[in-house]
Length: 477
Ligand code: ADP
Ligand code: GLC
Image 1 (cartoon, protein in one colour):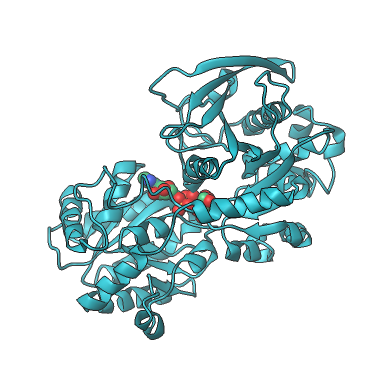
Image 2 (tube, rainbow, N blue to C red):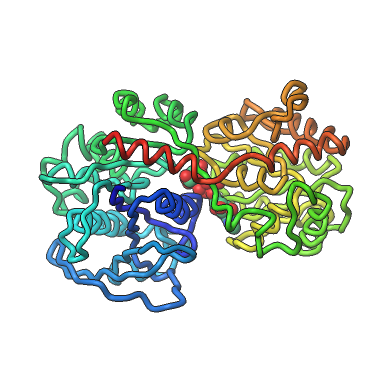
């Protein structure tokens, strides 16, 4: 049994902007079930609304400031979350990284440096919590200073740094580095220095004892210039200490048999009931209620990563096909605007909801027939996993975790019952539309379509296997 401090800047259901929250809200539970002692540390953001007031645990002094640590349970588990209560830095409304208007918090370096310092204090048992970590498991740039700071400590725990997305690096000026009062020793090519700037993610990649990322394919991709954002050399240099572990999903929340947010539960033996969710979805977005028209769903952050520009460029042609298109997302204002125009111009075929809505995301997964994910890169991706679990066949570009989790419906894979979606390689509207057409042809062949749904729904997406792989990593350290 290892004592693991899990450091994450978001955790579902307390606060979420994307898949990191889903992982942080479910991997620790899986590790706990496998006998590990896991504690979680998270900033106490203004946007976190708890049903019960968190309990005061202690006050610690870092960087000449007194900070309270509060404690709250991770819902649906026996796990403890330690909340860093620093209202001057974290009480703003908005999301963990930006204000209500989408502007990055001006003091993000200071906010997450404090977060990292406190994680180090907790890990080293200097926070009066009577608990010392064996392993500190950090996630993404917001926690990148932790492995770097710990290299300067005697008797330190081992560190694992998981990359969920190389595109966000936490890069700040050299002045910021000095303002943060960090040791000069960390201003080094093998630590935080990155082309004359300070990089939080580099702290994790250069200093952690082990690096993981969230799929085997992405682990290879980030060692190339196309996906490594300038850190491919360092990642390649460390490839012996780098591996990809695919994310699992929380089957208590994301399983059509148990999901209490959808009108009709179903499983692979009662697929006909999925149609009730489809009509509920069509009603909700005011599209014609018709079970025979295939629905293509899309949920996600409307950013370049997700290939939204491809979707927009292809949408006119997609809407010429016999389909309905239903999108839920928010992000780039230009994308939002163009997508809303389509919904306006094609009121019978296209519905666009701008915003963030968990319940609606579940209804789309349950009610759509296909799920479009033409990502330019995708470290793991969770929606294609949810989609398979719900028998909503994903149409994806072959990259990162999408390449690792979906078997393209081709004659051989259809025959041997492994096919679970549709895959295209080239990042182009042509390749995407051809693949949508390929999916539509099979949609018209009900026995084959149902078999594909069953193949997808029968796959094991539970966390257990992946959590076991993390434990294997911890055990090597
Ligand atoms: P990423 O972390 O890159 O955004 P993932 O596929 O790993 O991509 O995870 C995205 C998570 O966020 C999924 O749980 C998805 O359902 C959710 N999500 C994204 N956008 C929205 C939205 N607008 N409304 C509800 N859920 C959303
Ligand atoms: C990131 C990635 C996504 C991944 C998620 C959780 O946000 O963009 O692909 O699924 O983290 O690991």
